[in-house]
Every structure is written in structure tokens, then in C-alpha cells.
Length: 172
Image 1 (tube, helix red, strand yellow):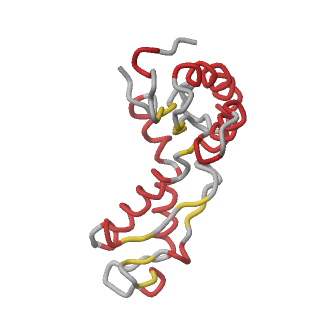
Image 2 (tube, rainbow, N blue to C red; image 1 turned 90 degrees about the vertical axis):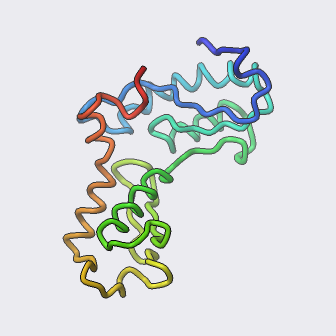
């Protein structure tokens, strides 16, 4: 596998984005075997060039590949980090803020679990400011249908991106 040594030599952090392109209708888990094999080939080359680097895994399925990268690297768990549901949580907060017509900085809500089809929204801990979302009384409060639609939009956002541009990554 090609690793641009001059660019990675001595790196403190390496963001791993290598992986097969997700096709329409394909789940992130469907990519697991292919992308795990890519990581198994890539990680040793990265470690040869930058043995002290922290690995930030972004490749899907991110949770599975973070574990694979941890095993292949032999690093302590603090040196292999997966992006997990960070992007999903950010999208979740944005949609809640948009619906409730508040600044996104005031929305505190998270998506948990595996980044993908089995992720879940943590409605019980969601707040706007210090007000629990379930107690948010406002003309733009959330109905059960609103909650379902917002979560479905978060859960399926990759599908829409893939349908629109063919991939969830930057394409050269």
C-alpha cells in the first residue's frame, strides 16, 4: 500500500480515511470486511513512517475499523480514536436547533451507539439551554412525528449524500 512517507514522517496525528466507496443501498457494516482489510494493510505502513502518531479513524464502519486499527497497531486505546457519532450528534443538534428556532450552541443532544443504522438518539438527556427537551414549551416544540423525522434525517444523511454525489468523502 502506498504511504507518502515525506508527508507523514514524524506526524503527531494521522487521520485515516482510506476505504471503499459506499454504494447506494449499501450499509456501513457492508463495508466492514473490505475496509478492515485495507486498514490491516495500511496501519503497519503508517506506523513504520510515524510510530508515535495518534490514529484518528474516520473510515466506515468507523467503530469496527477503530477496533481493527487498535488491534493491528498494538497501541493503547488512547492512541487510536474513532470519530464515532460525533458528526451524527452535530447534525442532530443542528436539526433540533433549526426546528426549535434556537441557536445550535444552546442545544445539547447526542446520538449514541454504532455510527450507522443502529445508532440511537438520547432524547432523555437532550436539552435546550438547561431546559430538558421534553419540557420545552414553545410554538416550535417537538411532537413525536417531529422527533421521528429529525432522527430519521440524521440516520439516513449518508444515503442522501451518496445519492447526490456518489460518495460521502471529498472526491477529487
